[in-house]
Length: 538
Image 1 (cartoon, rainbow, N blue to C red):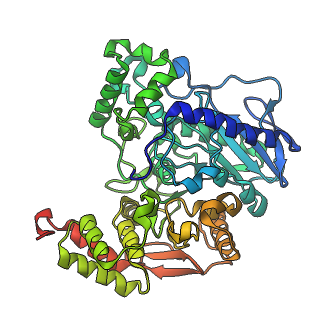
Image 2 (cartoon, rainbow, N blue to C red):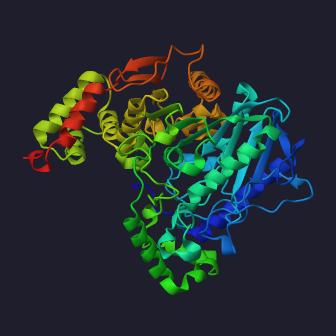
Image 3 (cartoon, helix red, strand yellow):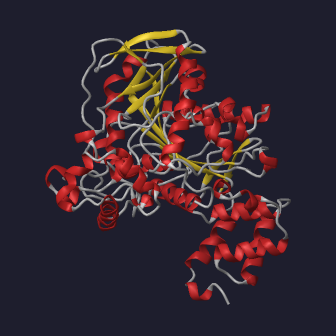
């Protein structure tokens, strides 16, 4: 990331304990909810504005000790009624990277290896079989949790009659260190962070009826890294049948990491930990801090700890060269924000720029000469009149980024499969925060989807106009979860996407369907990318 350096594990973990304590004390003062009985034992949560909330609900055993780096294990049942009013543990991770405006949304709950927990919001545990929406958080595969206030499903449950869940699972090396090539007890040590999510979905299948949910109508949805997790689940045999619709916001996973690359990353981390191939048992006995400290040094290949094309848990690339056959019948909704890359820019990179600086940035972005840069700038000015130079650049940067390109490719391949409908959206709301410089950045749409602007207003802003967008988007997401079609009375008819018409629902001041928004710019950028590198610049 271009933004801030990662913050050290120990210092931020201590601060997180203090912040979490405030959230826990608030929860402890609320009215108890209905007690529910699961396959592992009974739970008592609390009522929040009429919604029954159950936090920190275990769906599998602790991942510490002999369970570390191995697939999730069954949890031992409990006999007493378990308190479910506080967040569970957050997966061990390195913090940092998000804009400062987003920090108030993060409770920074205590880190720990007993982190395989879910949080549930339901209108009423006895309300009948309602649609179930399971949120997979962002943060790449490195960081994050399901406890951000912008992820809370209270309003989805209260206004839209769904059961909403967020899920914690193992991250970074603890979730994606590839050890299968060592064989023996490590033969199944691959993609365990994704297998955690599968275990959570199995828990949903077996238990969600006790919370008023329908195990036969489960939607997985996620943003950024969470969207990549959605894509990956669509190609995992163990996940087949555990969900029935899928939503990927501002992210995609077209391919997984090859085994050879995963092995190299494993070897690098083992060298940092000074553990030889014949001493792997030490991985389960060394202090957790040694692992997180190794990751925090920057010498460990943190970005390499992602899903692996291991041939077993993930036998094919999620969306390459085509959409996964096993999910052909699963309806799919996906899209991006207008200026995704604003999230990753430093504040000085968001300031107004003159024409000369715009040209310089476009040349660097596209690796073209002055004439080509001027041609692209003119094209953007023609099709998006009235926009400032910095806005033109950020939109071009987003159009040329992995976010837009991968999401579009994933939608095209899913549509080509002709097994289930695909719906594409574009989020065009511009935040007024920080003098409007955040624009429509990565993560901006999340509070709108959850109809939770109060939690996100520190970076989204809050206004009647913003709430109208939240009303439309949240209703569309719930309609999709309920029926596989996002259409509802508050928006125009939303046609399914195909590679020719490319119908896209644009959520801005109004909701409108546009065929191939920015299509001319998209094709011009593609022509530049497809050109041999030696011909791009003079």
